[in-house]
Image 1 (tube, rainbow, N blue to C red):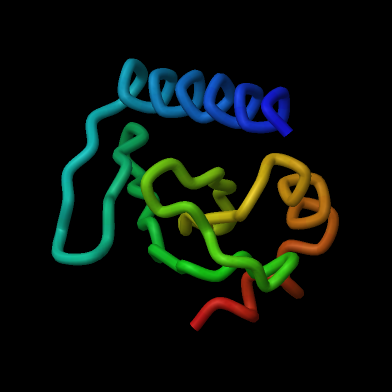
Image 2: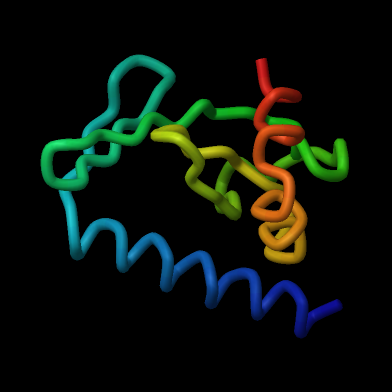
Length: 94
């Protein structure tokens, strides 16, 4: 259990650090816009993982980007499933 939590923290810190090092970001209401050159990705701020249906730890969510939107997932293991069928899982987020 401790190893899973430690891995999640390390991966999240790396991803967050990479995003902010490479691009700017600003908050707009409930959505977070991450700028990448001319394009901007919008965090949909979902609190339920579209893959498992579990709650997302909003203090340190695992995220995946698809078609200009950033989806929150409950754990790093869900990234592979989401990427395998992104249309299926992104459609579950309202």
